[in-house]
Length: 395
Ligand SMILES: Cc1cc2nc3c(=O)[nH]c(=O)nc-3n(C[C@H](O)[C@H](O)[C@H](O)COP(=O)(O)OP(=O)(O)OC[C@H]3O[C@@H](n4cnc5c(N)ncnc54)[C@H](O)[C@@H]3O)c2cc1C
Image (tube, helix red, strand yellow):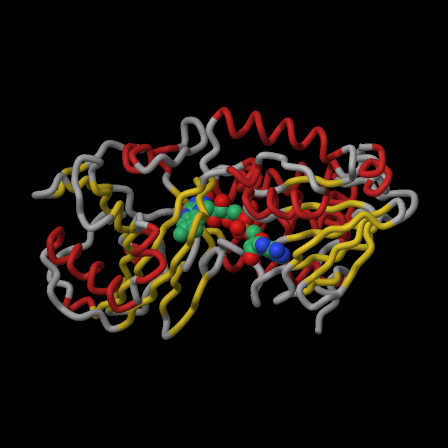
């Protein structure tokens, strides 16, 4: 196993240390959630010399970043890429030594489906119609990702922290308890870890529930709203597709009802290396009803995806492979009201040594989650040290 320290150059290490100053005495930091935000916090605090323990409920790290590489297909099960020119991700990739792995969008034309036919959309119109924001002035440049998918960023971070951060996967935190002047994190495995500060890098509802159960105080976070999505990736032999998949994909215009389908990405046209020679990969995005999310089997979603492709593109053949992913309440709705609520809660929690990080609190998207993780790592230098129990007692 390569040691994390040996994997990065002296220069990178010095730069990172300058960004997150070392503590005089190491602080024990507990991170709940191993998505990109939690991983960034873990990495930064590791560099600052802290004793870091990261808990992840799932069996893998990355949260909404999850790439499946199979039979020559690079399939994004979660996020497909970040806005081209995103500074937070660019800087992180540089530091992790994966900048040369970044690939840009190669097809830019997007279409809109009006119920009958496809029409060309203006640059930036497709993300805008889907409620996605791109950095100012960079809409026309589309997205970027890594040659082997967004999972590369997760793997690079995981490799850096492997030897110096305690990473516990398959171990959800279900309670945090005051413990003297510190906190105790209680995990599903019944492991208890004593920490001075906690970073909650989960969904907002879960964070709200956890805080209410643990410190007996409602923060309002448990009322946060988030949208659910189901994605269906379909792989075809190019010869069976019958249409030229020029462009990056189509969005279904708001006025059109197409079985809950919002958009389709022509993954293998949009980004390089997504499908092996002679094959294409498409990905459909659905907004499911709660009942559909709960009860509809994969076969039903695949049928629905095929029906959309038949109606919009006239494709009738069977896919060679299919991937269905359900993301309940994954996309945080961060309106002005929610941002204000989060800011107010953060002021109270910081006095207790608890910070919030991630897309659920400071999104949008991967860039928002990375920036939020970076900010939380810096803020840990200033939050009240070992504030947990003392503050609870004075309530
Ligand atoms: C289908 C889909 C497509 C997307 N596409 C894009 C895109 O193209 N571009 C873009 O910028 N953004 C996209 N996003 C959004 C983006 O992926 C997220 O904003 C970002 O990855 C959030 O990262 P995070 O670390 O804040 O949260 P998450 O990735 O949600 O990580 C939170 C982690 O906390 C863990 N957790 C929860 N409860 C517990 C517990 N009790 N104990 C321990 N761990 C726990 C979860 O298992 C999870 O791993 C997409 C999201 C989805 C679902």
